[in-house]
Length: 115
Figure 1 (tube, rainbow, N blue to C red):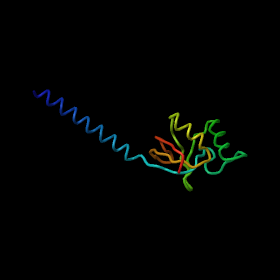
Figure 2: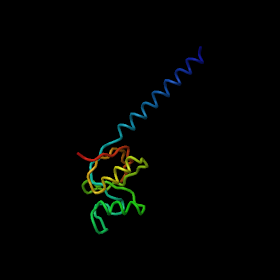
Figure 3: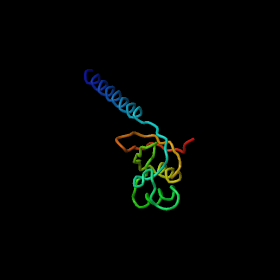
Figure 4: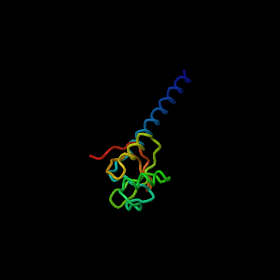
């Protein structure tokens, strides 16, 4: 009997802790609206042509996507193919990014065109 009660208590504690971690991670995610750029150029594009072409060119050469929000440039960290496709499509345009910020980097969980 004692063993069953201990197993139940352990399972319940594990569930409560997992739920707490999940909720804290969700609470930490924020939304940011800005212009899609690349980490190399930031707010000022160096290549001739339009901002979208410069962004795509820099990303093709290894730079990460970035989000320019006012005077702040965030590097976007994601391996999600849908998010990367949206960032490519919206290069040079306004988007809303959902993710968690750590320093100057946003770990992206979702991207959509800004309304």
